[in-house]
Length: 323
Image 1 (cartoon, rainbow, N blue to C red):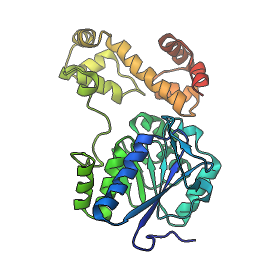
Image 2: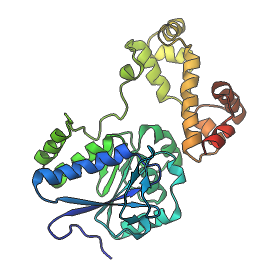
Image 3: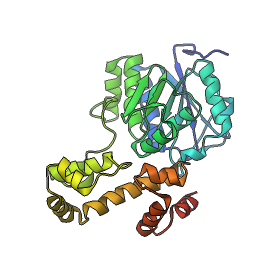
């Protein structure tokens, strides 16, 4: 069975694999541009079908049910197939899903992934040799799980017949880019205008809000110090090294953190590392010692002590409660 490029009448058929707990926002942001492209062009350029792991309605992370056309196992070799993920993605990489994606790839389907969906494509070995991206919250765990992949922190990546994006509204930008490539820039802009989307973002744009907006502070030296912390979670910098990097004395840096954040630099830095560790514990299958090392802790015992003091439970308890 060969993959179709277009159905009769020139329609590009697209499949969506809706995994349990997928992001409804990311999925809708991918489908709505297709619908509007059809409406504005007054013809069916795109059609789409949805599939779940068991053929029953797919339930998003928001608890919303979406009707589907069938089970992922029975998906035909459509020209393009997107895997839509969300939370707890490591729980939803069943062997039959992996087998289906490999089958589709062997029949020539272009494969895409939305939000945490790239994790499933990577697990199937279908991102080797391709640039790919994933939601920023999953990025460090993704790199830990698949160190040999060419993983970026971009908003979306289109590399030949592999399409990956960060989720949220990033899938909207990716779809608008694909519409521009497959039809015209004019149609993509018209679709964006209908969506009251004032600017189509490039794939190379940052995923996260700038620190200034996220934290509600504007002191440039303090922002620079926090950016250094976020960039060095695996190998934490000393307070004196941080101060030197941003052109301050250690005492000046401590005063800034106390004034604007009511934390010492050391305590704030520890909180960043523990927040990252908590994510890795609950959203990946990495062993606890690997989580500890990935977040700058020299031993599992030290990590456990800090985690218990900060969150009120040990790393193993955290993983047990969330699973």
